[in-house]
Structure formats: C-alpha cells, structure tokens
Image (cartoon, helix red, strand yellow):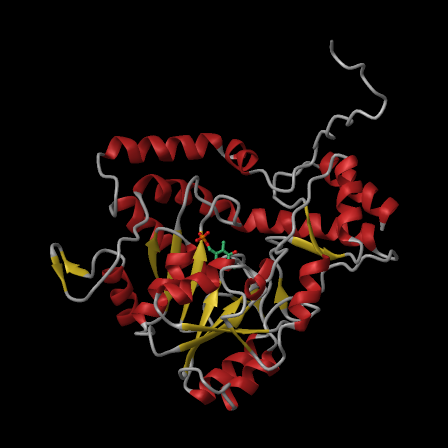
Length: 390
Ligand SMILES: *Cc1c(COP(=O)(O)O)cnc(C)c1O
C-alpha cells in the first residue's frame, strides 16, 4: 500500500523565469546571421585553419585596435590562449607566474600546464582584481623558495580592468611580462583604450557565455609583437612554421572554421551587446541604491562590460534562495578560491597578504542574471526583487 501523501512533501522547485545566463537566447537573437555563417563554413569543404579563421583573426585584431598594431591568433579555448602566450614567451619550468586566486581555475591551470609555478596574490575588495601593491611588493621582494618571477597574469575579472597602470609600472621595473587575461573583458577599456592592448599579450576565451562567444569552445590571443604572434601560431599547430616541419615543440590548439564563422557573424554586435549589459547594470544599480547589498564598484577611468554583475551579500545563500523563489537564477563566481580547492590546497604558493580578501569575497559574491538578450520584463522582475530584498 502506498503511504498517504503528507502535508510536508517537498514543494515543486520554483520555475526560473529569469535565468542567470542563456546562451540559447544569444543564438536565437542572431539566428539568421549565425545559420548563414555556419552553412558557409560547412559548404567550404575546409574545416580547420582556413579562410574563416584568418578573417576572424584579422577582424578581431582590427576591432581590438583600429590602428592595426595588434595581431590575433585563434586557438581552441581561453585556457590554451594563456598557455600559448606563456610558451611563446619561453616561460615554463623554473619560472614563477604571479596571478590571483579569485579567478576561473583556468588561469592557474594554464600556468601549471606549461610547468611554471603559480604565485597567487590577494585582491582589492572593491573591484575583485589583483592587489597592485601586493604585486609590486612580491616583484620587489620575491617570496623565498620560488623560482624567479617571469610574468604576471592580470585577470580583468567580471568585465572590468585591473589596476593596470601601477601593475604595468611594477612589471616594467622588474623586467617581468604582464599578460592580460581578457576572458571576461572583451570590449572593456581603461582610459578609453581597450583591454588586451596594454600587456605583452592578451588571452581571450570565446566560450559560449563570454561576451563574445562561439557555439562551442574557442579562444584567441592578441599581441602587438609580430614575432611572438608567429611563435604562438606555430606552437598552436605542432610547432609547424611550414606544413609537416616542426621548428619547435608545439601542441594542437586550433580554432575550427565553423566556430570562426560564428564568431565573425557575432563580432559586429559585440559592442551593442556590451552597451546593453551596461544598461542592465544601471537598472540593477538603481534598484540596489539605498539598500544594504553592495553593488559593483566601477574603477575610475574603466569602461566595464559586465561579463558578470556581481553584488556582495553577507547572507548570500538566503538571498539566493529568495531570488530563486521569485524565479530568478543566480550564480557564484567563484565559491571556492583556487588555493582552497582540493587540487591546489596546501601546495600552491600565496603572496604575503595570504588571500584574506579573496576568502571573504568567495563567501559573499553573487552574480545576477546578465546577458544582452534579457528582456525589459525580465530586468524589471530582477529589479523588483532587489528593491524588496535589498
Ligand atoms: C573562461 C575563463 C578562462 C578560460 O577560458 P576557457 O575558454 O574556458 O578555457 C580563463 N580565465 C578566465 C578569467 C575565464 O573567465
């Protein structure tokens, strides 16, 4: 006999009417352009490193810097983009690379993939990006027991610039390469200049939910150093400079033609998508004004592209549950700092500040729904909930 239904049966899960991210909406918004691009790539009969890929590289480099100074090299994903830069610079075993613990684990994974030693620094609590003073301090007085610091990976997290000026200055003085991780910062700028043009080279992920996304994996590296661009282009394909002849050891990290065609179809809409993200952020800011939840802080001179809209809430789990009840999806970027994850805990080097701000942020950050195709009604739903709960 079936037990009688009880009054305490679990209620059905709430229906999410405002997802945190929706790559399908991004596809549907440009379906005609994307379908035509995919059909063109399929009909071409050439599927890896061809016309579409070369055109995407040209168009992306020109979009990044209309002066023509930048070169772009497509690759398989954003993690490999960092790997290609490090390898292109000859950074591997016997080198330390400074970055942050408050980032996608990919940043740190890439450093270890080349055999280098990561050194994880703390963040500035307002912008969640690298503490520039701590970087200057470790470059000046490196932690004992580590190989020499050869590079710093500056992560422009959530869509806004790191404190780049002092970081560039400290790196220049120490003879250390500054690499930009632009995986969340396509189109973001500092003092009117696009991120990805400040350091020796920049890595972009083209993962579907990034501000510029493929419909699969993809990545691209940019640099104004033509020799470095050539070395990276060789490394991404077995070290070939010439077909079947490897000048040096390489890997396989190519951007395929179908993804390159999709990216070409989407690139003309990237700036408008970023503007829409800023508009949505403005609405969230207004809804949070006067409340107790901390809205994101924009760095002076920075053009934020809101890859994520991240607020700070001491009672995060309760807030997340109440938003879910209101049909609103959220995410946490990132719940566990890299240095506290099982793969890294206890063996990865930290800076003198010990990542205290990183650990505090990891407990409180919450990412609201953010993508250009959010409708006015969806944005209004989120704003109403913020006004009520904030
Ligand atoms: C997404 C991301 C990466 C890695 O990109 P993949 O394309 O997923 O390999 C690296 N760094 C940051 C900050 C990212 O957000």
